[in-house]
Structures are given as C-alpha cells and as structure tokens.
Length: 477
Image 1: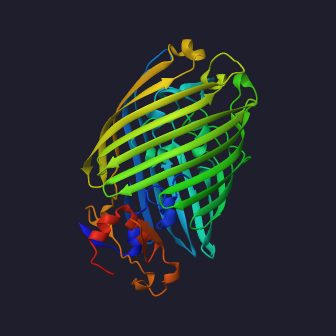
Image 2: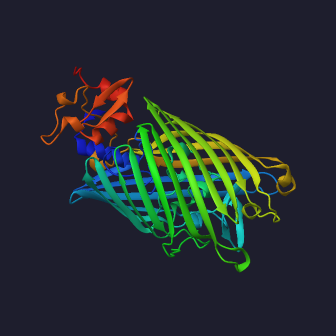
Image 3: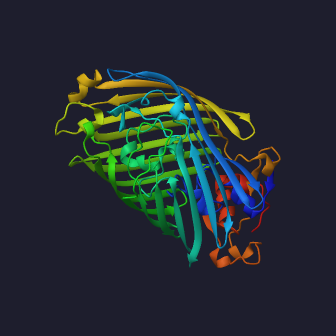
C-alpha cells in the first residue's frame, strides 16, 4: 500500500547498506566511495529512538565448475552480512558499521574456482585461478560527518577494518555485480583494499564532488581468515569523486601500498603503486533497474606496470528477473599466474553472463535461483598451462538478499510500504518546515522537468520510483 511518510522516515527508507539518511547516504557505498544517487535500495530498516538501524546481507550457495588444466569444481557458500547504526550527534551524524563473512568456513582450501583470478598467497604459493575467501571481519568502522559551511561538509572515517579512498565501489557492494556471485579477475587492480586492517580517511565534499585522502595498512591479509592482520598505517591514497548527474558517479584515485604483497620464498614484501578510474551508471525507470560499471586500474610492481579493464552490467525487472554480464581484460605477470618467470606480461580476458530469478520468501527478503556461464581466454603462450586458449565455466546457485524497498516490522508493521513525497516545479510552492529555504531546495530531473523537494531524503525517495510517486499525488500546478 502507498502512504505518505514524513521526511526523516522517508530518508531512512532510502538507507541501504551504503550509508546515511540523505542524498549522501544514498551515494555512499563501500567505505566512503560514491555510487549514483539514482540507485536501487536493498535493506532491512528499523528505527529505535534516535538510532536508525539497517541490515544488508548477501548469501549464495553455489556450485562452480571451471574447465581446463587449471579448472576445478567446488560446492560452497559466498556470503556476508552488514549492519549499520547512525544518529545525529551535535551538528553532524555518526555512523557505525560492521560487516562479517562466514567464508573462512564455507569456502574450502585457498578459495573457490575462478579461472584467471589472482591475488594474495596461501600455503606459501600465489593464489591463482581461484578467488580467496573473505576474512571473518570485513569491516568494523565508524564515521562522522558534519557541515563546514556553504553546502560543504567534512567527513572522517576509520576503524580496525575498513576501506581506504582507493578505487571504485568494491564489487560486493556494486549494484552491477549484485546478482553475480563470482569475483572479477580484475579485483586486485581495482578494489582489493576493500578489506584493510587499519584505515583512517578524511575528506570534504559538496553536492557534486568529493575529495579525500587515506592513511592505511596496505598489506594483503594472510590465509588465516579469522584474525586481524594489523600493520603500520604507512600506505597512502587519494580520490576525487564527481557526480555530474544523479545517474552517474565518476572517480579517479591513486595510492602507494607499502609492502602490499608477500615476497616469494621469504623475500621482502613488495610495494604496489595503483591508479584507478571508473564510471558507474544507474537508471531506475518504473519496474526496471539498470546498473553498469566501467573501470580501469593499473598496478606497478616488480618493476613493471600492468593494466586491467572491467565492464559489467545488471538489469533487474520488478525485483524478480535479473540478467547480468561482465567483460574483463587484464595484463598479468608470471608471478600472478604462477607460471615460469619471464619478462613478458600476459593479456588474459574473461567473458561472463547469467540470469537470476527471485521470489519473495518472507516480508523484506528475496530468494533466487540462477546460473552463469563464462569463457576464459588466454594467449598462445599459456595454451599448454591452461589446456587450451578457450576454457568455459559454469555456475549454478541459490541466493538470498533483502527485497527492494524492504522495511523492518518496527517501521512498517510487518508489511511492505512504498513511499511518495511532496514535490513541486516551483520550490516556493512547497509546504515545508519553517527552517526551509526555497533557494536551497534539493532538486532532480525527470522526463525533462525539474522537481523540487523539502529535503534531500524526499528527493532520493522520489527517485526510487518517480512515475508511481507522481501518479499517487493530486495535481499541484
């Protein structure tokens, strides 16, 4: 049923696992990275006095098969759960986040089969053609955000486990990767620092831009996935994010990761210099949600530079049918792929596509069943190592996640509530609280028209389903 909801609760409805109850909350994804404001919402929300509580989770039970000499089969579970609590403190807001995974127990050995993936070490060898499991603690962080003046705010973020300002939104949090259980083979060129044991980030931002820098522990976690791999905060990064429209989020970033990778045979750890750039596009139109990510990353290590490119997309209709795809091209060293040393780098690529069908299982949660196929492509130099230049793979899985616009029982009486909000073509015609300043009214474009709102939270709620919100309101102008 559709109801009118006050601005604070409307904002809370927009809270995903990404952030706070305003435009910034919708923008924030993993760590302090930005995604477009026109983003799909998947969360369970409960209001407790001054605290807004959110839970997001993603669970897969999967069977993976990768072919070729380096292929393998595995049954396991990829999973994580994230909780967040936020409230106003003084002039600003504080947010606490915790994200955890059971993969140390649900993914066997050194990881699940993922042909051409690489990164980290296990049992003394470089992990290759597998994706390592996540650590038990993926994020334990706190954040404080407050106004600085003239529509500019400052932000500080950090904790014993978190993500520095480096790279695009991490793949577990990207809407373009949500229905896809498999990690990108470009992960360690783009967003491998999304679990760093020791981070502090400071930044300032306006409506359409954000500048931030981090000091962090850039060392990759070890194979013992249930402990904390603390180290000196001697790595540094910086990121500039831009949001030219509500549908597009851009970022460029660079960082120096001190002692990022373990050396071979007891040798000294290896520093990595990383540069990334990305563009994320989200489009919500009635029952259809489309999300795409284009990202490039470059690592400089072992005296050579390697590049990686990713293009992934997901289209979901009626929160029921999801089609997804991913194309990746990456340059990898002999060290990455555990092949005999050479001065060459190898350009490998992987193409993947799949489908997930979701159904409601409880109020606020969706279960799905899906399948994906992939094709790993290696150069002629690696034909013998991989048993052929073309190596197909198959994935079959069931999954569980929050439904779009899900609410907790405390907020909705156990049912699902959709939200419409007040809007106007002229901000002076809005009926808003006494402190409202029409000259600073948040706005958005829809079908060539500009709409104004009493708050950023109202605007963000409108963007989830503009057509429905407008259809439920009487003519205003």
